[in-house]
Length: 77
Image 1 (tube, helix red, strand yellow):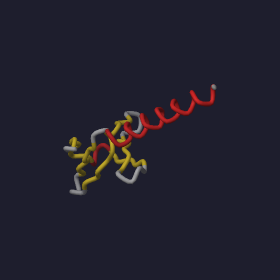
Image 2 (image 1 turned 90 degrees about the vertical axis):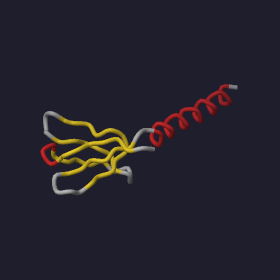
Image 3 (image 1 turned 30 degrees about the vertical axis):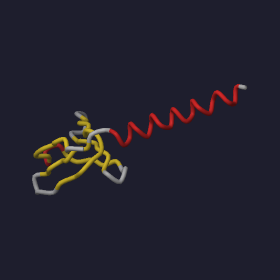
């Protein structure tokens, strides 16, 4: 009986995780050199290091120095 209850909960948890990953807004970071970085979710500024941490569209984490960033803007879905 317990086994039947855990499966729907596992499926619900997986659905919630997937909707959070794919459903959030995307952002574009424009650098002073003119390069653009497209990322998933809002970049997070780390004051101790002076870097922005972001996750690119391939799902990889990246860092960029804050003094290289000209603009961070949310993209239309």
